[in-house]
Length: 350
Image (cartoon, rainbow, N blue to C red; front, side, top):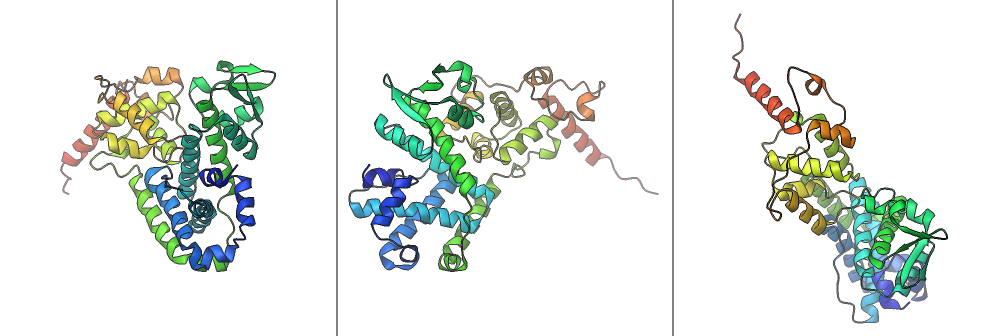
């Protein structure tokens, strides 16, 4: 692999060896004027992860451009470690994974195989397809909820799962995400923290602002406290960065739409998901809300939610036969009416 490949995939072990061969020391990277742009690019990497969920591409026409891009990766890792915020760490890991996936879409199979090897994924080529050992496949697809990823729905030969390049790259995306989440934050000594103090403080402020935008409480006039237990559970999962099953995701999106949230507000709710893809998620939301499908879907009834195994923590209202709650939207309307009635009752005077 050459310097351009290392710039595209700077997490590779060979990329680190390339930097060593260039004679770049940690002190140089942190303080020397010659690497000022690499430091700026490293910070931009983190900001891209926060704002867009993917690292923006930049032109790399020279060896110097490539080296700068490679160096931006360890800089970004130091910035993320200095901030030391779980929200940012997961967001950054996801963004690096998505960026790698998008770049692998256009690479030759030899490059994809080499990236897999350097991520410790047992892989090879067979009959124009890529294959990985079933143990690696199971490890990295365990959090992918779609039935398409079940081992029973894949082609397995002699212990290896055969995959087209895009699906193979998607598994590698998860491998990189998991790797970064396990490695970060790095232990940084005081000299590094002092050298990066201003940028780290700026990134802390940006992270706090971005995190606030995703909080469930930021739904304006919509009262989260009146949500049925199942929807509160789904929101909690989403805010914790967990992947929701498809049925739960559908139920939550359709519920939020019908109580008055915009597609943009719903999109923000899923932005911390480890499998977040902004274009794909936006398409799914707009399909469920009828913006592109022409059909406004409603959440499943409570009996259907139970059959799907996504009815969580039913409370006294759910189980009250007099209330006759048969639907999440019905629960929300009853709660809202009760709250309005309580406000309308004048206080008694002694």
